[in-house]
Amino acid sequence: MPAFIFDLDGTLVDSVYQHVMAWHAALRECGFDLSIWRVHRRIGMSGGLMIRALARELDMPLEEPIIKRLGELHEQEFKRRISSIAPLPGARDLLAELRDLNIPYIIATSGTQADAGPMLELLGRIGEKIVTREDVKRAKPDPDLFLTAAKRLHVKDVEVIVAGDSVWDMLAARRANFLGVGVLSGGYGQQELEQAGAFRVYADPEEMRRHLDELGVREE
Amino acid sequence: MPAFIFDLDGTLVDSVYQHVMAWHAALRECGFDLSIWRVHRRIGMSGGLMIRALARELDMPLEEPIIKRLGELHEQEFKRRISSIAPLPGARDLLAELRDLNIPYIIATSGTQADAGPMLELLGRIGEKIVTREDVKRAKPDPDLFLTAAKRLHVKDVEVIVAGDSVWDMLAARRANFLGVGVLSGGYGQQELEQAGAFRVYADPEEMRRHLDELGVREE
Image (cartoon, chains in turn brown, green):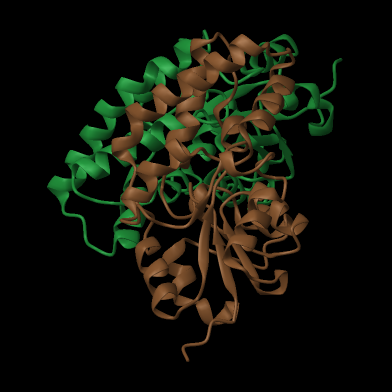
């Protein structure tokens, strides 16, 4: 039977677009005019890599004080938008069904524990097993988060299915030798996720739950 | 030489994500909990079709008073977000270059004249040639907007290139027998636009401007 590792933002909670707009607002407040879709395509990767990617796209180096200020502004801007975030359809049911079937699962996010807290509350799972930014040296698309998550579940690599909404999830899954499964709920297109290695792509957690048999989950 | 028809939101101005968040907020205020990516994928189509699509995804009929209320709320919510909208990189230069080369172009949007006004201001082109929702019976993905636009330019169908950021632009272009060219700046993936019929896909107006030769534009 498989074990599951879930990304959080865009996979279980509908928070990607709020992160996008919060980063965009933070960048504007620091005088950087970056197109919003370019921010969207970077959500889910480690903060450090994201800043480096944005710096390349802005074609200017970002100094340490600005990087710190960007992070603080993003946090403020994100907090202002938190009330508009909801769990994705089927997210609670999917996790409940896995628990009922005694299938091990864990959440692995590039975000911090502080970021993850309110999202887990939305899922009604404050005590949920989770691996965050603080637990690893490098976040996605490095494989460390998923490797640490699998270790905590005590499962072998052939058993692990990683569910995520971004190509960074799929890339990190491949590097960890785990099977990647995509969801469209983060706003990436199906082909982008498939091209990044997704074995299957579902609309959202609800569609994934209804097709768990396709992922080798048996009700016995 | 070709003639160009440009979509507005997501193609010349960076306003798609603000429209997405405004619709999402309007839907929430009316008690409808729809995932944000589903709203994103409907931006650019006619308001009527969009509401019908959203109603299907919510699996409930939307009555006339609610539809009206949604439209009003969207307008309010969008206005709150207008200050964060910028022209897309290269948009002004692209239009200026076409004017310099005496290449006819026009803008065609599923939005209303009232929606388009502030966007044209951002482009510094208040008197720009434009076809809006009011000029046709059916907006995108019906071909009417683009057919009307071509008529106003007095150009033949073999000459027309439609530039847009959404699959609805590409669909409407195909139905009008015009060549569709995509831009990624609305947040769709490259393959989604190609699959919908885009002959070429550029990152944004800036990349398109630097590759106008690929679209048959000669500097003579």
